[in-house]
Length: 115
Image (cartoon, rainbow, N blue to C red; front, side, top):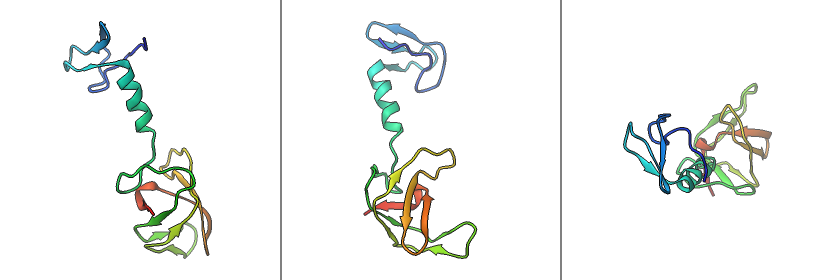
């Protein structure tokens, strides 16, 4: 059985196993270890502005004019970006891509939609 140390609902440390479920006495939340593991896996997926899950190799369209930092260029609304690569990033730029006329850059998934 997977050992839980915090409640997924209220983040309390006062949790205990009760048969096949885990219980939180602070918020009365009950969960199974497999549900908690599935939620963690689902949370790591990268979604576009409309909630569609993105994958490596997808094509996306930009939904907002984006200024390119350090230049006077702008990525216009509707620009189609092919063959994206998903990357982990602390600053939110989780899509690595190449845009025609601009070059390689990283985008935030909140400014694109799956094409």
